[in-house]
Each structure stands twice: as structure tokens, then as C-alpha cells.
Amino acid sequence: MSWWRKSPDLTLLSALWLLLAIGIVLVLPQMLASWSITSILQFATLLSLVALGQSFVVMSGGGGIDLSVGGNVSLSAVMGMLALHQGINPLWLPLICLLTGTLAGAINGWLIARLRLWPLIVTLGSFYLFSGLALALTSGAAVAGVPAELTQWGRGTQFFVPLPFLTCVIPAFLIAWLILSKSAWGKWIYACGFNEHATRLVGIPVDRLRFLTYCLSGMLAGCAGFVSLSWLGSARPEIGVNLELESLTAALLGGIAIFGGRGSVIGVLAAALMLVTIKTCMLQLGLNSVWQLGVVGILLIIVLMAQRLFIYRR
Amino acid sequence: MHMTSREIALLAIALLAIAGFSWFSPWFATVDNLLTILRNSSELLLIALGMTLVIAMGGVDVSVGVVMGVAAWAVGQLLLVNSPWLAALAGPLLGLLLGLITALVVVMGRIPAIVGTLGLFGVWRTGLFALLGGQWLSGLPGSLTSGLMHPLLGLPVMAWIIVLVWACVWLVLRHTPYGLWLLAAGNSEEKARLAGIPVTQVRIATFMISGLLCGIAATCYIATYRNVEMTVGGSLALEAIAAVVLGGTRITGGACSLLGTLLGVLLLRILQNGLLLVGIPSLWQTVVTGAVLLVVLSSEAASGRVIAFRRTA
Image (tube, rainbow over all chains, first blue to last red; front, side, top):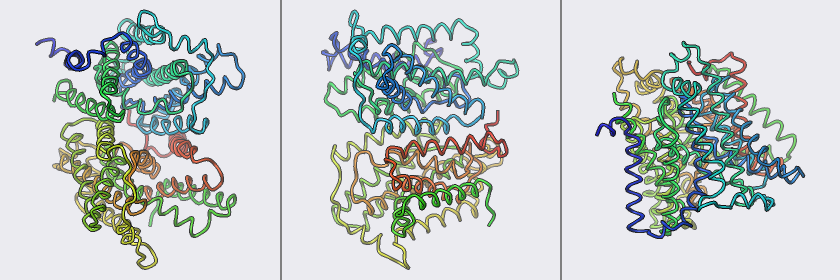
């Protein structure tokens, strides 16, 4: 019972996982096969990368939110492929995707941390800008022509685990965990989400920190864009649709407090995996993909109410 | 009438855009095209009006476009059983109800409006899909259209309804205690509570008014297009927020400008229409909307003269 009081959000997450696992065993035992686990991890790669960036942004407080992540994923993938068609060496592809994402994130961060504009409006505007650019630059069609070596990496597996998950998601979460729990930087992030005023008084560079979290969110979105094109074999301008809703839900379900200053990345990974598992189950049950949106929406509202009840109790 | 610097700037940008588009396209400055722009603005005019109130109160609602979609479904269904009056009323009523649900989730659940309404957006989107059964609702009878498009004093009835709604909201906002309470609650919830203002009721009422306006927009939508598709109203919420913020309403609440919202909506629609006529593919519209929003806000913040959009650190 004391465990419940200590981390109600993680308890809620475990309860949901338990419920989901029981449901799968009873109704959809075929989901336990190795191919389905591989496919879940494959789909989860994009979401967990983006959700990790979203978590950093929300955790650093100040009304932090990044609605532009989905547009950023699409834009990075498209820019990478357009550069490839200009005749650059495919080896530069990952760098271009990461760079596009980081730059896009830096625009957000600059407007928010330097000009002190409200994050909601800035990332709403840049969501328009990025997703619009991704669509306009490609006229809405997928850009094919990813080199075979890359799709080999993007679709390859090792012990049922997709290579992108092994080489991107696991290191990213490990590094994020190390940063948050072992470095001063991590303590600063918690601090400025927990009490911005006190953090400023202590002399911690709050604005620079927030600028960096938006850059980081952009970089992870760029990484997700790169993974998407090496997995699908083409850059799709609509690959990031609804990722802002899903990544926020994953972050909050994972225990990131909406007003910042609280949360762990392990929970975020578990939550992202759960969302994708639910999605896959619904596909297996023959439900249209629109239903996922409703389930994700309801989960988001439930977890927010739970946070209000158990964390921000007044 | 006294105009703020923001409203003058918006008017100047809009006039500049009109001049530029007329120069490059012979079709832009025709009466037909100007009427088209106004007709295309009708839903956004209503939804942005509700959004102005919601943002002035310190909230935001990203589910308005889909709320309009669900209400439009109800209007369409009732129109099929051939009762245009009932259908026309069903939109606003359902909008009011959905607004109440939004209010219950956000206000009574005490969760941040942006995240709460993002969740509701997902729920309504799925709900609309389930209601439509995966098909478009199309080929609706024209009884509602002929009623709302009937000319009255040179303008269609629908235009007069929109003017009337704007006048009502202006009256309520500027000449009733509710309007003052709303701005006070947006300015500082705590101070408003200490002053004895029924903040919770005011917030619930505001979300309901916004829902009601979405419902009226749904009736107008059906009268104009006579079909309901799955993705109806997809970008309306974002466009409404952009128009409201462009218009000078403070994003953290406490101050708003109805004239600014009007100019913001018209500017967005003029840009979208003009770019199309100049020969730029429609896919670029969202890029331009986003860029205009970011450029206007950041140039204002960078110039440092107006601090309305600055966060208080």
C-alpha cells in the first residue's frame, strides 16, 4: 500500500499492463508469438523515441509541451530523402535527419526560451510549419529510394528484437536515464520543473536548459524520422500524424507530471510499449485504426485525472 | 472606435495581402471571389469567436473542430428524415451538450485545458467515425441550404445569423457581469476567487458557449457543403487558435479583442484564397498559416514593445 502512495502513476501503469496482459492471454493468445512481439517493438521504436523527447520537455516545466513532434518526424524523414535525391552520400543520411530535427527543435527552443513565447502557441505554429512543409515539399506522396543497406538495418532483427530498437531506443533511454539520475543536468531539469523561481534564484540557467530540452526533443524526432524511412523504405510525409497526442499520453502514463519536475524514463518506455501493444491488439481484433485515437484520448484523460487526484492533491 | 496597434497591424497586413494578390491575379479582387472568401470563413468565424472567450478565460480547446463535426453529423441525420427546423436546432443543442462534457472534464476534473481537450479530440474523432459507420454522409437534401442561403437585404440569412451571434457575444462580453468575470478569471484565477467571482461556473459556461457556437457552425457547415466526411473540421481548431492569437487575445487569458479575432480569421482566409489564385498549391496553406503565426508573434516579442504575449517568469 505504501508503494501505491509513493508512486501512484507507476502503480496505475502496472495495473493497466496487468489488465492488458490478462486480456491478451485470454482473448488474443496469438499475440504472444515472436513475430508479433517483433512487430510491436518495431512500431514502438518511433513512439518511444518521440515520447522520450516529449518527456524532457514536459519535465522541465514552465508549461512545456511540444506539439510539433509529429510534424518534425515527417519533416526530418522528408528532408533526408530529398537530400539523398540531390546526390549526397547515403552515409550522411542519418546525420541530415538528426540535424533537421535538432534545428527544428532549436527554432522552438529559441522562440520559447529566448523570446519567452508560450510553448503551446509556438509549437502549435511550428506543428503547422513542419507538417505543412513535409507535405508541400513532397506534394503529399511518399519519397521512395532508400538504399537497400539501410532497409536491411531498418528491418533486421536480433533475437526477435528489431535492430532500430536495439541500436536507437535502448541506448537513448539508457543515456536519458543516466542523465536524469546521475548528472547535475538531470537534477537541474527536475528542479526547474518543480520550482522555477527557486531554481532561478540558485543560479541554474533555466532558459538555456529549456532551450536544450526542445533541441533534444527535436533531435529524437529526427532520429525517429530516420528510423521510419529505413524501416518503411520511403519517407512518408504523414508518418508523424497524431504522434503529439500519442507521445503526450505515453509521457504522462509513464509518470511524467504534467506541470513538470517529476517522472522517470523507464515508465515512459513501458507506457509507449503499452500504447503500441493496445494498438496492435485492436488491429488484430479487426478494428479500424481510428479507434486507437479514442482509446489513447480516454487514457490521456484518465491519467490526468489520476495525477490530479494523487499527485497534485490540494 | 479606438484600435490597438495589433489590430492596425493586422489590418495593414490584410490590405497589403489584398493589394498584392490583386496585382498578381486578375480573379482575386472580384465580387464573386470576395463572397467566396466570406463564405469560406463562416464556420471559422463562429468557432474562433468561441475560442476567443475560452482563451480569454485562460483555457484553450483543441477539440472544437471535431465537436463541430459530431454536431454536423446530427444535423445531417435529422435532415435525412426531412425536418429542417429540427435539424437546424439539433446542431446548437448537441454543441452545447458536448461543450458541457468538455467543461466537466477540464473544469471539474481540474486538468490543463490543452491536454484534456487533446484527449477529447481523440475521443470525438473516434466517436464521429463510429457514428458515420466508416462512410461519408452525403447527398443531404437542400431544404436547410435554401433556407439559410435565402437572400435578405442583399446578404444570405446565414451571414445575418453570424452577425447576430457576434453582436450577442460582444454584448455579453462587454456589457454583462459575466464578461467581466471571464476576463478576471483569465487574469488570475486565485484573485478572481478571492473577489467572490464564481470562477468554476464562469469557466463551465464559457466552454458551453464555445460548444454552442461550434453547433451553430455545424448547421452552417451542413447548409454550405451538404455532406459530412470523416475528417471534417480537422484543422479548424488550430486555425481558430491561430486567428485568435493573431488578433491580440492574450494566450494566458485576461484580455481579448473581438475585432482582432475577426481580422485574424479574415487574414487567414484571404491568404489561403489568394495563394491558391496566385498558383501556389493548396498544400502550402498550412505552411503559410504556421509561418504567419510564428513571424507575427516573434517579431512582436523581439521588438519588445508589447509585452502582452510575454510569459511572466
